[in-house]
Image (cartoon, rainbow, N blue to C red; front, side, top):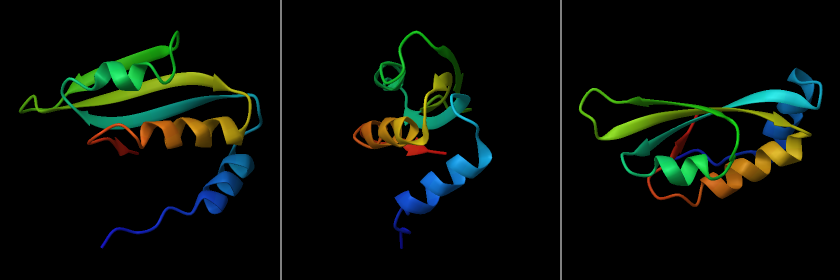
Length: 88
């Protein structure tokens, strides 16, 4: 059974652990071919890709300067609309 995401608790944790604006590292796993969709969430930022051993998935890491916790939450909400994505 999938655990429900607690947006309020995540926002509190972000604010406790960061001093905004802050450089934030987003990590996602997507099916191969979906990398561009993830990259489009945060264009013009540092991105690194790593293919899985079988080549069916790609790990996407993006470092971006974020102004506040709400901006980070907004990126995760947009990312959730990408089919097959796993946010870490």
